[in-house]
Every structure is written in C-alpha cells, then in structure tokens.
Amino acid sequence: MHVLIVEDTPEVVEIIDVALKLRWADCEVTSIDRGGLAPGIVASARPDLIMLDLGLPDVDGIDLLEQIRRISEVPVIILTSRAHEAARVRGLETGADDYMVKPFSATEMLARVQAVLRRASRSGGGAVGIITRESLAVDLEQRSVTVDGQFVPLSRLEWEVFSYLARNAGKVVKHNDLKQRGWGSTIVEDSVVKMCIRRIRGKLSKTGGDPEVILTHRGTGYSFIG
Ligand code: CA
Image 1 (spheres, rainbow, N blue to C red):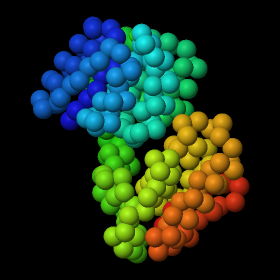
Image 2: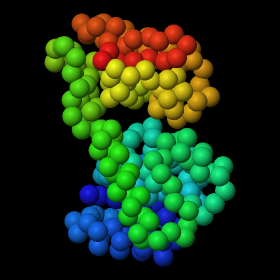
Image 3: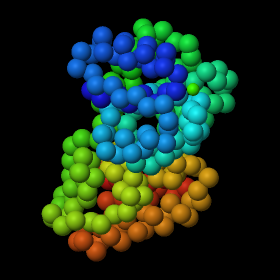
C-alpha cells in the first residue's frame, strides 16, 4: 500500500507515518508539505490513499482536492484543525471520503483508514478491472473504452463521466453526482452535462457501439444500462 501525506506539520506526518508502518509493515509513505506537488504525484505514483491537510502553506486544501478529483478517485481523508462544520461539509461534498479533526489519535486514524479502504475496495474505487457490455469494454485501469477492440477517443471529462456511469451500472446517477465527478462542482448547467453525454454517445456510435448503453432519466440523471 502506498499512502501520500500532504501535510506541513512534521509532528502530524510523524504520527501518521509511524502508525501506518506499524499496522502495515509493507506500507510505503510519501509525505510532502506543499500541496502544489500533489497532483503530479497522484498522476505518476498512483497512491492508494491520500491524507490531506486543508491548511497548507501554498494552496487551499479544498481546491487541491478538486484538482485531485479531476484526475483520480483515490480515497482521500481530510485532516483539519478547522473544527467548524462548513469546512468539513465542503470537503465531503468535494469528494473526500472521510475527515479527521486534529488532534487525533493513531488508533482513530487507523480505524478510519481501514474503513475508507474497505469501502473503496467494495465500490471498485481502486479503479481496477474491465466492465463489458456486448462489444463494449470499459477498462478502468487503462482508462480506455473500446468497441470490438476499436478505441473510442474520449476526452478526460468524457472518460470521467462515462466510467463513473459504467462503474455504477444499473443505477441512476443523479445530475449533481455527475457534475461533481466531471467538473468538480455542482454549479455546472444541466445542459453542459447533456452535451457531454451527447458527445459520448456520438463517439460510441461512430466506433460502431450502441449509444443507448447510456440511458436518460429525464429530470433525474443518467444510467449505464444494467
Ligand atoms: Ca497545516
């Protein structure tokens, strides 16, 4: 397991680092005290979990979380000394999996880490495996979509939206959840989501796939056919 700690207080990093390595002997820990470095590490090293401090010296933790969510579904636990509700709620809305208010004990931290990792493995959040539907294959690891082996050229945004629907096959994904997933915000207009779905359907048809693999649930959202 590889854990990325984004935190500028050495004492907090130390507590997490020691506790994780005691609990998981093979745990690899990378720690950085500047948030600006995080997206690059997430993209290249693909950590299994991120512990993210909201009060960083160079960037706002919530903004950073938004950036991370645009490129990865890695589980994120927010570390905050901002005990007030607003920051926590905003963190969870932005896509954090859990949060801890500082100071926290090693025991509490390990319990939360285990719970988050368990949930992530159940929901397929670790992005492994291939989802197939007739000639269509959605490869979550390679981040690719193919029809009869032919590559469907999706943009990053289209991939986020389509793969999210595929992972939730058979379930109606609400407009707001898709907006959060693709655009990192619910402020986006419904028409923008609609356009994105139309582009994905167009690209599927062009490659010989079935555009109706995405179903429209008027006024609610979309689903990948279950
Ligand atoms: Ca801090």
